Amino acid sequence: MLLTEYDEAEQMELFKEDGRREGRIKVLVSLVRDGILSIKDATKRAGITEADFEQKMAAKENSALLSSSG
Image 1 (cartoon, rainbow, N blue to C red):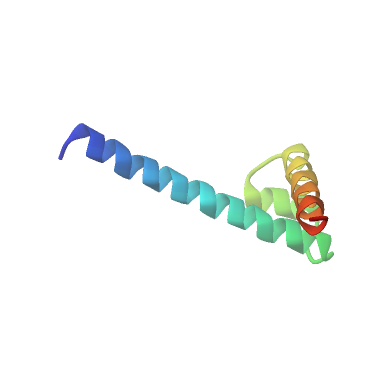
Image 2 (tube, rainbow, N blue to C red):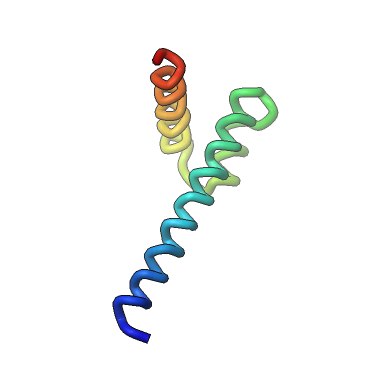
């Protein structure tokens, strides 16, 4: 196996993991907004701080507002 092939495979796996992580956070944000899960519980499940989670919630809200206004 060439070094570049290995790096490409490793990069693809990192991209997949990033996508899975973002998907989990998206679901957790939705559960928090629906009142099903507390922010504290969501951050524990996401493995991030409350400040980071709230920042992601705000970013998702801004993204939703931008996509609905067009």
